[in-house]
Image (tube, rainbow, N blue to C red):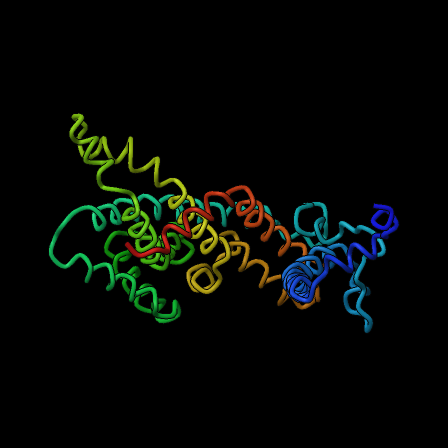
Amino acid sequence: MAHREKRTFIDHLAHWLTWKRFIFLLTLTIFLVTILFPFYWMVASSFKSYAEIGGRHPVYIPSSLRWDAYDELFDPANSSYWNFGRNILNSIKVAVPTALIAVILSTLGAYAIARLHFRGKNLMLNSILIVYLFPGILLIIPLFAMLSQIGAKMGFEVQDNLGVLVFTYLAQTLPVALYMLTNYFRTIPEEIEQAGLIDGCSRLSVIWRITLPLSIPAMVSVAVYTFMIAWNEFLYALVFLNSRTKFTMPIQINTIFNDPTPRPNVVMAASTIMTLPVIILFLALERFLEEGLSAGGVKG
């Protein structure tokens, strides 16, 4: 007992720290630094002056918290005002409807594939998933040509139309959302729904009262997935949006970056604002995401 009382913290640490634990902690530290340091650099750079960012030697900690970059983004009195709030609103108008529509459509389609029996449903599901394997850039020209013809006949403009942009995002996100929810619905025992049907519930009532409440984790995962794609998407928005009043955040950040007067701190500030909602969303819904992605990734 007396010998144990004389052991120092270093002695306890040396006894606890085996080679396996040391390698694990070293790997974990490298992994966390690799992930967190770029985010820290982005946030810190948004408060730096141009001299601190453009200097020869890297400045890891800003000398003071300068809000000049954020003033350029949001303060109308600033001579270099970018009206970034309008771009945030445009991104919300695109990302939120994309997530909601994708969840509704993929839920209906996935339930039909998982529960109903009809000829060729597995072929249909696999064919839909194959569409997702093609790079998004290959679909731009066919989508643009198709929507232009539809718009000419129905009397709406394809360019600078946020609703059209939502449709193009659905073409990218629905295949994998449908596949995720189909696999999740297959993990729900059919006996639960059959018991509801025996008790007198209709098929729609069973879906509303039994299946959907059990599927909340998967639906949340699909919603966050589609929201994140629409929130960060750049290529389709660059093709379909020409007016500055319709720019989403990625397009506006690219515009700031290509401005003749270098503004790296403003670019970092805008990138920080664009990144924070996604991080907050992931942290708030982490429990649902873990359960939904793990269950939806198991093929039934």
